[in-house]
Image (cartoon, rainbow, N blue to C red; front, top):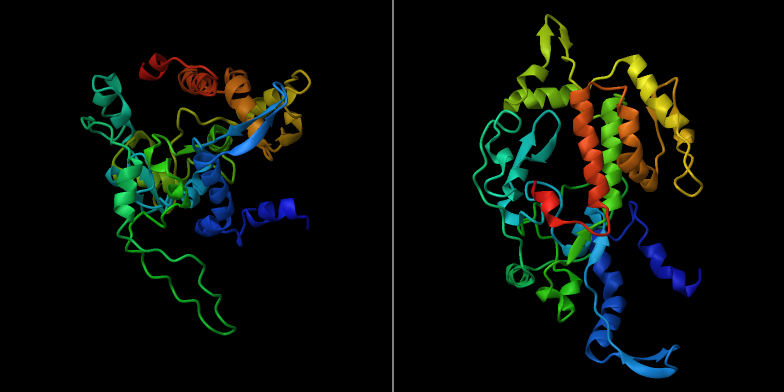
Length: 346
């Protein structure tokens, strides 16, 4: 293997990926970034045909949500998975779905926003709390100064030996002190880590399509989800109905009949776009089986922003279609190069 590609091979995700130990592999990069910030390096300007001293700094990282934990040191799993809410994260454990959910999003709305007073549409209570204050770099360093972490993974068990459970961490959500804090300016940055919009858009698109088509995977409207809603006490019109040994799920407003699902897939398979606009999405659609599979990030990007309203017009009732069309319009605005802040405050 050639020298320039050795680092890339170490960072490929998988069961043997570095995970939280990625800081060990980032040390050479951090050393070079320190030189670029403190001393700079002579760089040749081809336009002016002269050499100047170039300095550089890292503004932030852009990655998916699991990598957020590996780079920042804040765990993105469990009760305190939200880095913005940090220690003020409100989470609820769903016993049937076996996962945490986070239901206090209305705290980020303006205090007089109408959604704060809606009860039935959310968790049956009005929201009066203010948005949590994000952690500053200096606050993170103060919390991390008293903690000690050890890099490396536990050795694999020997043949015939049982794997012992790992002890529960006493550091809370912190898994390590990020190596980026060795940069002299890192603690003063207002935004240190960002989430890639394309990853978020792909996850939303796959969950949306899986729920509408009732796919075996990515379907969020399952018997477990309905039981958890009943346990929490929200959406009583969607609670499972049990008669004897038979349990039925009431039809939701977004539930499509077989012919509507087939029409939904047929519209997507029949759409033709200009060259280089997207991949051939029709190859990922099976009209007879009413499934959509193998979508890439850019395919989901095009579907969410442009094609979804076309697919919904004749497949869903107007009330349900309107909500998803508004989501599509928001996705288009959210990914724009320039956005007016007032749009997000409506």
